[in-house]
Length: 380
Image (cartoon, rainbow, N blue to C red; front, top):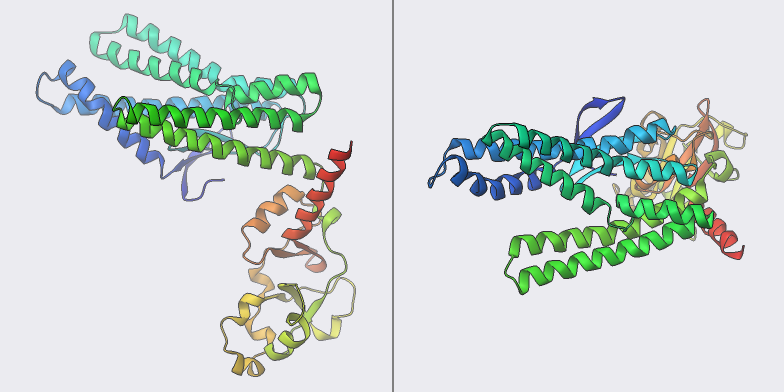
């Protein structure tokens, strides 16, 4: 989901990742908190102690976000769901769970786990604030408040926030259908995003709270966008649930002989055709079933040569060799295959079994399959 994120380590086999954008919120917290601590621990002039407290609280907030997401992830693991990673980023964190829960009760348990952790941290911080010396009491009190706000904010009823997932679980329980429940929760998520955006404009334009207003506006835009994308992902998972590559791959496809020149390739396979990628095989086995895969030839390879020299270059010299191609396995889930295809420039990958070509899968094949499944669902 997140590019340009570094892996810090693993907890319970779950990769913990840090996106570069997390540095933005960390810096903003330190910048906003230092003036709060300056008169309390330094007096009128800033000193080192106020900066230390600001940095420490910002780090503790980051740890609190991690524990919040870890609550979701560990419950999801207990429900036998695959957790890809936990990633901290500018707007908080996310536990990347690859599958939907099997039933509403599991969805509800996963959704409430994070806010429950935050509420426990808030209670623990409150107790420490009550018992500790003034400096630690101040730090603990602020940490307790941050966790309480985190829990309350995440329980807003807008998907994909935790409150939206709770709402989806309840609607799923009464309607017995995940997709309509997700649709309603996502619609409320979009409305929540719009409300946060309008709040940001009011704070910034009418009350002069530029930083708070900008942050609220950014959160609103983020919620609106994630509500849309999360609903589309839910549709994909529903349509492709239980489907493997072997169910949707093309079993009848054209292969390209490695001894063709680029000019012959263009004339026979490109002009007047819609295909953009072809599996390359040896000419002696081109007509055989399940021939060995030599490589992949796509239209991108042509861009490296002027058209007047196409007759001088053969496919075997310019193709991507099989050793540099990561083929799909016919037993791979369609969801995993779609993720691989989305990161493939040509939107097509070969399907092999024991290094022999058994099929081809294109991004549009999955798109057509999903459209058919959605049409069948709508007719019910």
